[in-house]
Image 1 (cartoon, rainbow over the protein chains, first blue to last red):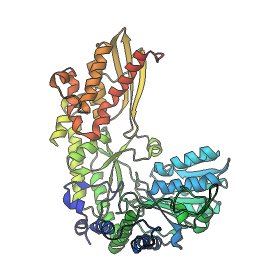
Image 2 (cartoon, rainbow over the protein chains, first blue to last red; image 1 turned 30 degrees about the horizontal axis):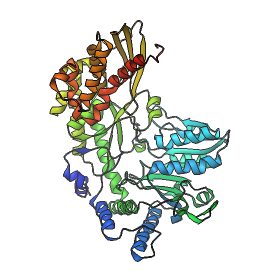
Image 3 (cartoon, rainbow over the protein chains, first blue to last red; image 1 turned 90 degrees about the vertical axis):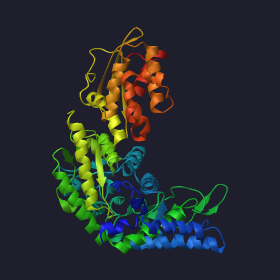
Amino acid sequence: MSPEEIKKDFPLLQNRKEVYLDSGATTQKPIQVIEAVDEYYRKYNANPHRGAYSLSIEATQAYEDTRIKIAKFINARYSEEIIFSKNATESLNLVAYSYGMDNLEAGDEVVISIMEHHANLVPWQHVSKTKGATLKYMYMNDEYELTDEEIESKITDKTKVVGITHISNVLGTINNVKKIINYAHKKGAIVILDASQSIPHTKIDVQDLDADFLAFSGHKLLAPFGIGVLYGKREILNKMNPFLMGGDMIEYVYEQNTTFAPLPNKFEAGTQNVGGVIGLGAAIDYIEKIGYDTIQKIENEVTSYAIEKMSKLDFLDIYITPNKKNHSAVISFNIKGVHPHDVASILDANGVCVRSGNHCAQPLLRFMGIDSTCRASFYFYNTKEDADKLVEALKKAYEMFKKYM
Amino acid sequence: MDELNDLYTDLIMEHSMNSCNKRELECCDYCKMGHNPNCGDEIKLELKMDGDIIDDLAFSGHGCAISQASTSIMIDTLRGKNIHEARKIIETFIGMIKREITDEAELKKLEDAIAFRNVSHMPARVKCALLAWHTIEDMLNERMEGNSDGK
């Protein structure tokens, strides 16, 4: 399949003229997902786990079937290892609070990378401060990569928790997470993998990776907003206290005491986003129909093409690793001497959507010695023509500023 | 693109790239940082008063063309004004950007700062244009309230 054919499945890309290069922030949705959500609300919406009537049972069934689908999708051993959340941020907070607060002690170390999104950074900062643990960073080298030496020098016998992003949302660097997980386990630490930027692009196998926890957002994976996933190993989740308390996560509630429901309900307090779950299920069906091989083939082709064209623009600084095999579909860049916010506005006026700013990664940008970047992020519905339009718009932006430099 | 060309005018570009107001004052009475964490923009405003008159203003820091030019043009507009005139102009500028003030006669008092009028149609750039104006507004308020010890 070609990206031109795939584009036809995405109504927004048909309805709008813009070139959409912000899939790292959120993806557009295929008609199959939109229709699945629409059908759910038209035909079988009810509060799950509650009604004894067949409509509610149907909604519950669809909700639980999707849990099984997701477990298979990421090769989890048990479906109760899949916890639904609002987004990756909530999933990561769940681990920080329910695992970190109870298991970290003064003197322990939490190790994360400098590439983390604030969602996998600020919660660990908070928990570390509260518990008196030390928060340490694995820094990248000049090629925007974490070396084995850096990993082995930062993860020590004192390390109890390691948080790592699979793919950097700013740099597109694919981290060697197998190495990190393996090494952390040797040192007796558990590992939380932020797969928000990887699962849209690459097959995730939690058993092969041996991650203890893994988080992602549905909306970056063709699904609607408001639905996210936390995977956790059953034996660890079973020992953890609940994160949010309320309806549906309980067994018996007395005036002064409560016993909690078993997994996965223990971590799913309150009425859940069934429509979002249905949408996520349809998104996974769509990904599997296209296939990760095709997705990667298209992305690699378009991203390489864009990098090649952009590398010829000598007015650009591009922040990507030179090792192609370690780079995903994200290109951060700046026009030398021009603020990225201005560049993004001018690209927008030329019909190209890119993000500008610090991309929720302030410590990373500070480490790089810059304030912000523009970021073009590609997905399998982007064509070489999209990349050409980006390059043309960049030339125009540069022309606009050149005469005042 | 037209709307953008109306915004990135020669006046704004000149002020953003080569501002003579981007410097440090030899001595100042008030100094305040302004920032937009989402953009990473940061400016430092320095203010020197002569009684009730704004004797001089200068800025340093970094930001997009809109925020840098807005800061520089604001300084040109407010220099030499007394504190009451200045506060009125600040109020008018913020009102213009928020589309609360559209009266031509009123807007004329903004002098060159009227160049940012089009920002009112660009929600993504409103914060950029207002950064310096909110910062000076706070500085003058602090002076009026007399709860600032100077620096």
